[in-house]
Amino acid sequence: MGIAGAANLVCLVNLPRGREHPYAPLGLLCLAGALKGTAFPSLVLDFELLYRTGKLSSSDPNLPETVARMAADTGARFFGVTTDCSSYPVTIRFCQLLKERNPRAVVILGGPHASFIGPETIAAFPEAVDFVVRGEGEETLPELLAALAAGSDPGAVRGIAYRADGRVVATPPRPPVRDLDALPRPDFTGYPVAELLALFAPLGQHPFLPVESGRGCPKACSFCAATRLWGRHRARAPRTVFDEMAALNREHGVSAFEVIQDNIASDPGFLPAFCDLLTDAGSPFRWSCSISTDFLDDAIAERMRRAGCTGVFVGIESGSPEMQRLIGKQLDLGHAERAVRACLERGMTVGTGFILGFPEETTRDLDLTLSLATRLRRAGAEIRLSQLSIFPGTPIYRRHLGEVVLEERYSCTSVPLLSFAGQRELVARHPELFSSYFTLPNRHWPQVDLGWMILFFDIAWMYFPQPLGNVLEAAGPLGDGPLDVFLAWDRWRASTRPDAPFTPDFVFYSFNDFLDHFAAELGRRRAERPGDLDSPAAPA
Ligand code: B12
Image 1 (cartoon, rainbow, N blue to C red):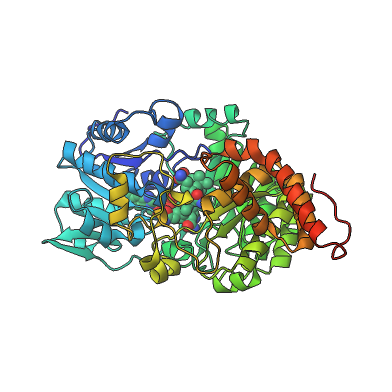
Image 2: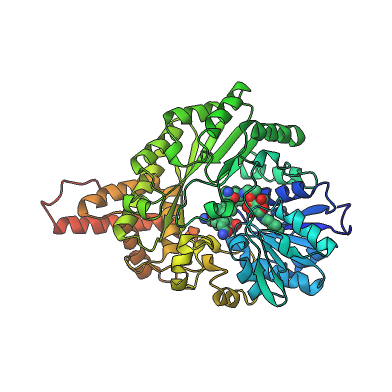
């Protein structure tokens, strides 16, 4: 790190999160690209990578202090920290500790979480955070740094929040970057790419890097902040994306990519042209992407496969047409199911995301979601169930923030890797900042623990998809859906293992016992209602 200690050094910080895959912090690398050649040299300090490579230990009781010391030791004058919901408490703690060590440090937050709660963050933690940048940072950050270095009024910089004369000020929003192709490439030069790529082999995964295809999404779903974060959706030119892949391939030997955008088909013209470009070049890369099923059919799936696409992620969210309408996603669920199958039939992996816990969701909606997920799992898709998280910047946050409750266990999208003394009190005091740690009660459901429900289905779908399917087939004629099966499991757990730990291992190792218990229960219920039912298959 030759530039450490240089005047005007900007340290771009990614705090450790304990993610499921190794990931390059693309947003910070974009900022490094934007600062290249300016008066503000930057370095990306990726604590997630240090954690994954064993250079930081999550069992270090002083991990927040260690991380703050390492950041302070760079000698940087400016610190730009990227934020998301699950790392926000530790982000605040990190900034406090950094400022204690180096009171002259200028701390700037940005990213999808802080963007929506800039003034609130600065008002709550004036000792820790100096500026919050809203939305895209490539133009705002260099402008802000230039204003600070020149000692001029940052009030002229659009898209920031800060404190002036004891008041919190938010400047007018900055319009979205008009031409994404004109942005500098993400700068990987100071980043230890080889170390990151070496992490994939032990996980049995193909090493990949992220490339952006564009920003934003034409939809405005009630739970998602993407549309509000990025403003108008914009695509990059297929050729720019292809050239970036080719350059990363030349420079780092990587031949697989995750194409980053909430929905690669946001601009309907991009995807066909991108596929053709790759196919004409001999499909040199493997790639995956997120796509809305609206845009996915046999023809486009075939085009994607030929172009090297090996996997897609689709957010379906709910199996209920009524919920599709209420959350504003408006998917045609029959089409969604066919779209998933079109990809699976072509050998692609398909990850499907579902959300449980919308405030209006009834038990019937929930059953429809769990049934659809079970069908897709049996067809070969991977299922990711999430508890509804309340993100700042979303309609759900605006409507329901006043109703959230802090359960004993945090909401499962926000289990922090780093905890520190006083974290729970900090979270409890600021639902407006840490909303994703809270739960939104649902009036229509029985009192169920969503954490257990998600753990139950995760394990069942991962390891027991066939037996679970058989159970559902056997329970169906008795009027039971997947929710009833979970409730039966939950009763069985409460009566036989009331102190069971909340762990995947517990669900896994007790699953066969539950199946035996449930088969016996179904047998009893059938016997009580002879003649009502055809002779049903016993669950295997
Ligand atoms: C890839 C991805 C992931 C990857 C990891 C990403 C990574 N780099 O480490 C994985 C799959 C692991 C992941 C996981 C999760 N993710 Co995610 N993920 C994304 C996704 C699709 C792309 C991120 C990206 O690279 N964007 C492109 C770069 C260029 O954008 P950027 O990072 O936002 O940076 C720009 C600006 O935000 C800003 N900026 C960012 N940081 C900073 C810092 C400073 C100082 C400044 C000035 C500016 C600035 O400038 C950058 C350039 O313009 C985004 C959606 C999206 N389209 O961005 C969601 C997104 C970030 N994820 C989200 C969520 C909720 C999650 C999960 C919690 C989901 C879950 N169900 O568990 C988990 C978190 C797990 C964990 N423990 O951390 C939300 C975050 C919402 C929030 N309020 O925090 C997003 C926005 C999706 C959404 N539509 O809501 N995710």
